[in-house]
Length: 173
Image 1 (tube, rainbow, N blue to C red):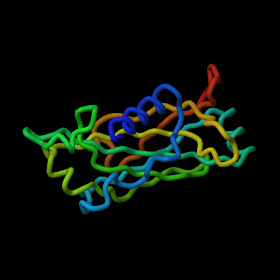
Image 2: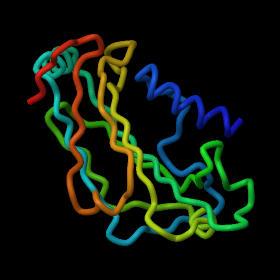
Image 3: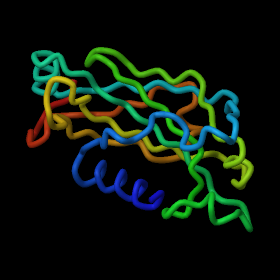
Image 4: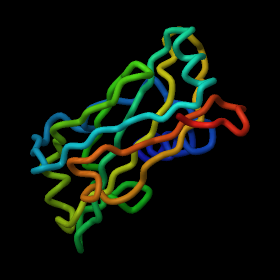
């Protein structure tokens, strides 16, 4: 089931631009204990095309920002910690924001046992953005992602561009 949930999330975000409502915004395990990553906070600023901004505002729709933290397994890490992508899931962050606001993640907490199974180097971060589907049934946004090392974004603002799904030549402001 864990493999399916990770593959489903990746497929859904990358190919369909959607967000399954069954996903948790917190860490995957509640029994392992959490550890705060020092200096790991970051912000996300969404750059919307004029059409996307107008559509979100007229429908009073929110934007969802989700971040997924992973680490590289250390040698001989137990298989139960390694996901289908060959990484170790450390935790997740999420926020719902208005179209004119930034998402702020001041403190990042990761699963202590999972962190102990990594090479203890810089965690990786994947940030996905989509509409919250509160007033509109389907996702409205076609957004870029951030996928890379956590270190370069610590203490900074990551900018992600979005336009409406199907919008062509959307100028982002």
